[in-house]
Amino acid sequence: MLDFLTVTLPISGVPVNIGLLVLLGVAVGVLGGFFGMGGAWMVTPALNIFGFPMPFAVGTDLCHMAGKSIISTRRHAKFGNVDMRLGLTMLAFDVVGIEIGARLVMFLERLGLAGPVIRWVYVIFLFLIAALVFYDYFKKRAMEKAAPSAGGDEGSAVRWHETLHKIKIPPIIRFDVAGVECSMWLPATVGLLVGILAGFLGIGGGLLMMPALVYLIGCPTYVAVGTDLFTVMIAGFYGAFTYGMKGRIEFLAVIFMLMGAAPGAQIGTIATKYIRGYGIRLIFGITVVCAMISVILKQMGLTAAATWMVMGAVSVLTVVVVVGMVQGAVREIRAKKS
Amino acid sequence: MGARGWILRARVVAIGAVLTAMPTWLLAGGGEKQGKLVHVADTRNLKGINLYFADLYNTNRFLFTLEVVAITALMGLVLGLVMDWVVGRIGLDLSKREGKE
Image (cartoon, rainbow over all chains, first blue to last red; front, side, top):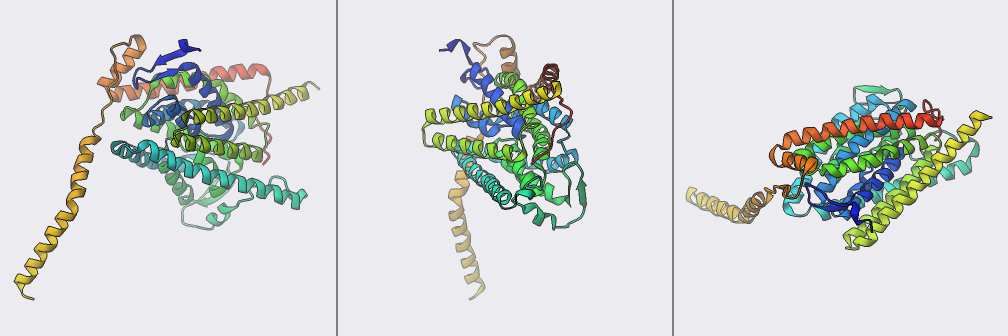
């Protein structure tokens, strides 16, 4: 069925259904705009499952992520969610880290180990991130139950950033949009570490950057989402350049995915207007768990099960975000009319 | 121990070190040769824009990269403007958001 949509990609020679690429673009656009990330943690395994060799999956994903992030970042900037100073500080070190990570991938490719090593490192980090997000969510719920009157907007239940802000190595910088004052070396170090992992895993950094901005830097969720997308956009372009030079980008796939990502990114970004910060974090945690299970299934050789896991999870979560956005939009339009 | 003894000991250590390191050197040398992975796009059945990009990929990787990055940026910008216009028609206020954690 739908064989007429299957084309052989010109550079990698992989036969792929372009309908699936567009749908993947839509879903990743929605979830990426909503969580503030490129969505590589879905795209890289999905492309790998579609038959792309892992380095091509990574390079193609980084390139598509760069284009899609332009769309989401513009929208978040209009909402006032982007702290450019914080983003640029982290980015300067993030880019260095990405290059180190990309070189690690090429080294592993020469040894013939790129696929399995990248997948297992993926699994470990997905697990750690999901555990942190759920711990934070349930701790926050418990705090709200214990003191309902204080359960408003006071920030994260996990407050590692307060300890990190006590490290006063000059220069100390004030990041106005994020409402954070800390040593410049804190975002710089976080940016470098995120970059190394991002370049290695081919995930643009959003998956790591979003929780890092919230839990290590101390940003509100919305500013973390917007600032993250800003850094993902530039890091994505750098990643696209370096993987392009290494010959690991399938440009035709990038074009089809961008066509789907354009409407998706708008929907996902607008949904953040109506869904509260901790709601975003909870859906984020669930998505990370789904991604982790799919990568494990793939590593176990259960490719079909991994495909269903990725596509099923992405579809359900996309529907959840779209429904949230539509409900919020309907409320707003009705309120305007009344 | 005399000078001759020290020289003999140094030779033994040096030979031992070379023998220990040799497998690593050989493996490293093998790794370098294997490492020259060059991917070439098969252009035999391609035409139009696919043929153009595949040819460019094979012949000028730098230009290929520049064009890919530039077109991606342009597509992102144009598609973003188009989607802004479409969403603006719906009547939502896209200039502000209620910030709530």
